[in-house]
Image (tube, rainbow, N blue to C red; front, side):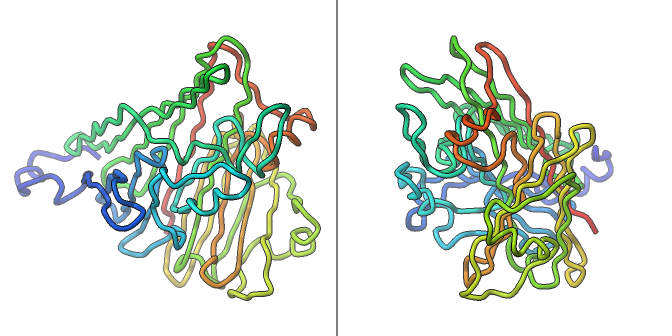
Length: 330
């Protein structure tokens, strides 16, 4: 939405209507983490963290939160430890935690290499961060570069752009991943989109337009009839994980809606490059969370994915583009 001259003449700063605000977090373990608060002007607000891979932390619509934020909140990536499941200690959740770019899923040994849970993307600081927002011309745009370089190993570069049209309630994430090395390397990407209270509650409805869905384990499979909703927090609950396989000829769609709040959130993604979606939910006190996670492989270890012949590889000098859209529905 491009603003007309009459509207512009009525405001001192365009941030009265929409825009971005840059800050540095100072509290506890988040000290020093860069933050960019975004107000789209349509009721949607969210926070981008350049030091956590340009992922998204808090998110709200008309002042009502819809993202999950873990008790650790937005810790500095300096606290990251790649050993086994130590990742849980720095997982802030937020609206978006990106997993990859070489591996995601459980920690494992793959050949001579040890991989931690969910990879390093979310604990890598972005470089060349640019806020080219132009509210008068109707665009909020933040971009930057996340590098995954290893001596004697992979040389992956991710160019990320996060954008929202002024006056609308949409977040668009576009990642261009390029292999700058001289040989093909694994490239696993998963977009861990996390929902929390109050949009996530026992009255929430969840939908995924998948072709097939199976539980990752026996416990999840036993509860597959509960896919469309959330139970109340209960200490007897365990993690439930489901693998959705999408139709590659149509856009992937997944959503959560809360009729009592009067709005929902829809995720749209390009299934030609992201043909899977993992649905993860945990119904425990404080750990009350649902994630809908588009990805280019099932959410299993890189060793298991390689063994199954499903490991995505990126050829030397080539690029792949992943597109994910998160939009408010009413």
